[in-house]
Image (cartoon, rainbow, N blue to C red; front, side, top):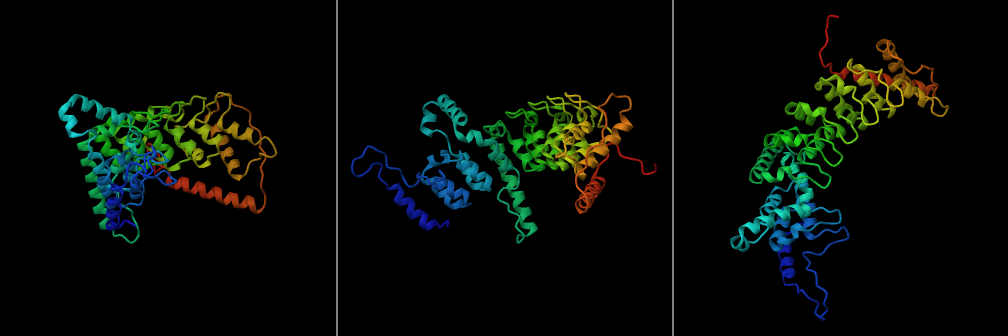
Length: 405
């Protein structure tokens, strides 16, 4: 419950805890400060996980070595504290020296080497990017509950951002660290759709926007995959050429958006990325974004792509199929007959092919089977019109449009 008086009593008892069993056993007797529960959490893990800053600070003062322990999920107290927004706990852990002052005075060069090695091998290294971007994003320590006033939240937001900036100014080396999957601070910022954090990191180290994780995805890929339009805008504002980068599968950011079905991310990319070749670029398997959206039946994404005149519906994939012929082939069997949504997508693809692909040799058109009748067909038809109305109301034309013609 975070009762400090009780904690002080328990810490005093724990510090008086013997190191060995009274019966003379050779086994080491664990201190209550370092004992773990079934989840592998020490008392410090539990304190920061329950947002008890005062308790966590007291535990750190009682035993500094607890800050290096990881729980059953390989989380350090530093990671949990930053995720929960405990600014004072994060600052205290980061400010704790890795080596004693006496050792630094005795051998400064060895101390620097030891400190650097600790940052590399400690589990904290694998969580550093997540920790410090979550500290920076300006949402730390802020829960926008309905009973809290707007001004109070704004004040806390300003304070948290100032604290995060100050920490990074004091420890700029932390900004370039990555987690165990190769994700850097920008990868984590875009997951939260936080343009403020992206801008802050860019001002300190813009090259992070171009760095890839272990699956060769840039932060812009992550923003598209998580559906983070504000983060996409912030990335493209400072680094527009990052949209040209592909991941380990040859997928660009348009592929990433349609695979995840993130319509908001796709809309944002269509309005801000001008190069038509990126919209029609094939991945490692020869698939364009339109083909992928059709094959995965992400119908809103496919329809939005068709609304953009830069998207070419005539491109054949590695199997010699267009997006239309793929939808058609999947519905060739009786059990796979099209529902109303698929039928509408097929008709739109067929219409665009007839208008824009007259000089191309395309797979033959056959009338697919349509499943559903009566009330179900009417219900699906209504749903289709709602999807279309939404797309029409929200689509942004890259080059603008004439209101006269």
